[in-house]
Image 1 (cartoon, one colour):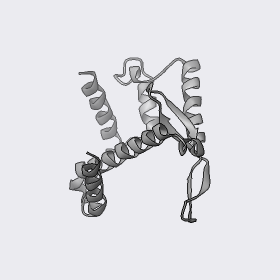
Image 2 (tube, rainbow, N blue to C red):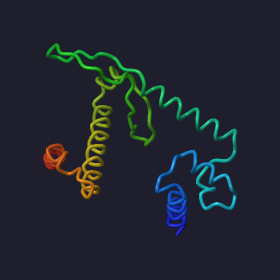
Image 3 (tube, helix red, strand yellow):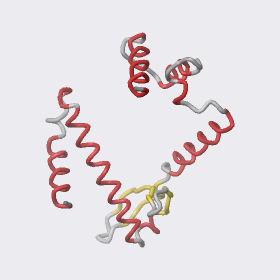
Length: 151
């Protein structure tokens, strides 16, 4: 019920702005303690500041790239730190050279790639009415084949 209330409020706000919203508009509407959106946000400024800094740290860790030399001698640019899900369920950013030496970390990164590919294929399918399916048909077919090979 709460989800539908929030969705309804977001749609109401979007309709006030020709079907469009910015994140700032949502936050501004949510400042009203009586808004259905209010409880979706952290209003303790000290806690919100910490959470924002954590988000900034993630952004920072995703910024840096290195040139990687493949075994065949070709080079490519890759993120220097990879987000790895640990067996305990938390995420860590790990130097790519360390990930490359740990089978469990490699498997975690591959599982994340699989999840992202599945999510991408699902989004394309869900938005087929926007005429995107044909544009990405080869990609989604390859994802389907990959998922069949893994299963």
